[in-house]
Structure formats: C-alpha cells, structure tokens
Length: 442
Image (cartoon, rainbow, N blue to C red):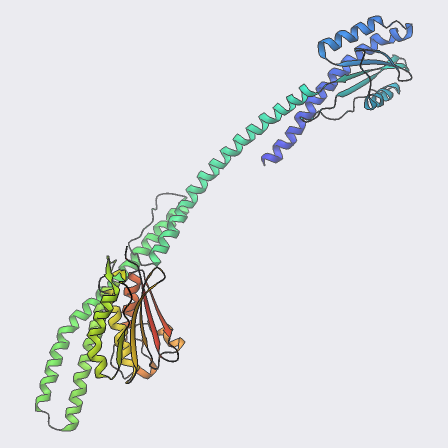
C-alpha cells in the first residue's frame, strides 16, 4: 500500500519541479525573445549580449540567440555551443512552436534542460532564443524530496510493523499458550492450565473452556485411579479371609476329585490376589508425577537375575546375564527398573517353555541405558506385540497360563514416567526381544 501511494507521489513531485523549472525558463526565454527581435532586425546585438551575459553570471544558465538558419548570433558565453539536442529544440522554435519537451528532471539526471522560444511577431519568425539550464541543483532537490518521502514511508512502515506485531502477539499469545498446555496435558501433566484473561474475547472464552475441560479430565482420572486403588484395598481383606476358609475346607477332603477341585479353588484365589496386587501397582504407577533418581542399571539387572534364577531353574530355563564392560548409570522413577525387569523376566520365563534361554543384557544406547530381555521361545506376532501393552490382554495360546495381563502395561507406565521408551521386537530366529530405554544419569 505504501508503494502504491508513494511511487505515484514521487513521480508527481519530480513532474511538479520539472514544470516549475520549465515555466521559469520559458518566462526568461520569452523576455529575451522580446529583446532579441529589434536586435536581430537592426543587427545591433551589443545590449542583448550584455543581458545574456548578466543572466548567465547570476543564474548560471546559458542562453543563445539563433537566426532563421539556426546559426548562433549571440550567446551568454563565448565558448557556449549548442549540441544536437539543443539545435533540435531551436529548429522546433523556428517553426513557430515553444520547444520545452525535454523530459522530466529525475534525481539521477545529468543532461541540461533545453528550452527554446521563437523570436518574431505577427506569425513571422526571424530567430529563436535557446536556454541551456544545468539540472544538478534541481535533481538534488527532487532527490531530497524523495528521501523525505521514503523516510516518512519507512517511519509509517515501521510503526505499522510495530502495531501489527503487537496486535499479532496479543492475538496469538493465547493460542501459543493453549498449544503448549494441550501438549503438556497430552503428555500427562493434568495440573496444566492457561491464563484466560488475555487476548481477544473469543480466545479468552476458549481458554476458560480448556481449563474447565482439563479440570474435568483430571478429576475423572483421579476418581478412576482412586476407585481402582480403593477397590483393590477393599477386596484384599475379604479375599484373604476367603482363601483361609477355602484352605481350611481341604483338611477334611478325602476323595481325589474333591481334593483336585480344592486345589484349583486355592489357585484361583491366589490368581485373584495377583490381579489385585497388579491393579494396586498400576494405580500407584499412574498417580501423579514422580521424582527421578539415578541408578546403576547393571547392578540392578544383576540383582533381578539372581532373584529369578530359582524360578527359571525350576522350569528348566537358562537365565543368562551379560555383564556390561562398565557401570551404567540411568535416571528413572524409583523402583522402575526393578519392576520393569521383574515383569519382563517373569513373562519370558513363563511363556518361553522348557529348554529355552532368557538373556538379560544391559548396555549403553542412544545417549542412555537400554535393558534387553531376550528369549528364544515362541514369541509374538506383530499384531500381538502391538496389543501386548493393553490392560488384561492375553495371547490366544496363553489364556490358561497364570497371570493378570497387567505386567507389560505397568512396565509401559513406569518407563513413560521415567521419560524412557519401551519396545517389543522380534528375536531371530524365534522369540521375543523386550527393550526398555532410560535416560543417562545427570
């Protein structure tokens, strides 16, 4: 918009100054034409030459009088000679026309401005007066006007940019805050809120609605977690009492069928207790934020391997540990590494089958610490690996194997709370490769 306004205005300023200059020179040339008529008729040009000389001395504008053949008769300076352009203008004047079409004076122009008027009266032309005006001063004046115009335009442009920037920040700041808060809420920070007192009214209302939504989501999740935690606690005591009574019933049983039924009932109560323990662990893992602590991942892994050795040996499974060449310090939620390894080793031992090997291998990886639990059992398909972290999910061929289906979801929650990564990968030629990654200790 500034360019559309200022460019025509700049052209208009140059044209205005040119018209003023041409008008002044035409007036001067017309005066000299009045003086030149009697001088040319009487061939007495002394007074005319004196006038032209004084004019040149005062205004530094050359003036020449030519006859009907365009020959110079008198000039303001002895060395002043008309060039081709000036002669062209003089011939136009000898035709009875004022010749002043010599273009616009632009700031970069260096050629002089030539103006010619005819000398004579009553339609008779006996000569012409030609003025040759330097335009440097006028061109500088036009350049100064353009500079002032450009400076004013820059000031207006800068003011417009500042105003637009301020308006844009005022308008977009709530959007940026809302975007940041939405990402934090999606990452699990349920306490995040946005200021709802800044920006346009529509964005203020949107901020208020977002805060209400975040509060509702946080309250709903907290109620859900509290319900799971309280329900698990409330069910624990009746379940313990039920298990004791079921065990007491087995004392008087003598028939083999009754004894087998009693054993299955006791196992079901134990399985229900494991489910409640897993629900409690999951509720604790999902509750709020956690403080991160530094751990020696290698030593923690070695301790868990030692703890699971008897279980693995009982099931005829080789549990192997690959010690890292140097200590590996990882940063994670307290007990996250222990619980993650317990769940992964438990699954590997439980589902691999007799005669297989389970390998636990810590190592430095991607500027952090990775813990690999690898078995050569039947493994999982790609679709099953994607579903394995869903709560209570069990593989189709593992429905009769004891377990709650909450081990891997607990691992995923603990690893996510530690800003880590949890991946289930295929092991070649068969088996499952579980990898948990934690950031390196600070």
